[in-house]
Image (cartoon, rainbow, N blue to C red):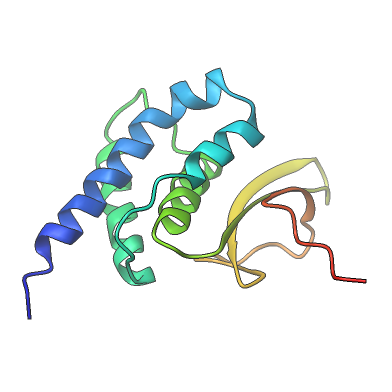
Length: 137
């Protein structure tokens, strides 16, 4: 079996590059245009656990950098991009809840379910990319 480290290292470097580039990309682009761009550019297919490992490594590094925002938006954008580019049908979603005050959250879905986190039942989806396909009439 070939050594998997080069593939894992490349994926981790890609995840880190995403996290480092996102603040400027978010500031310069509309969300739909950014998500479209983050969906392009295939990388070698990777299983979900390898993608999560790469993202965790990137997060561990960026947490030490004060100029890299660490919010659900940036984490979800990076997760969405890696999953899509590795061939997974990920969907980026944003929502609001309002039990006492309005709070927003961003997450990624796979197969219609939140991926890698549990969500508050109070969240109402306000934006999703890509939009669900309309059923054929």
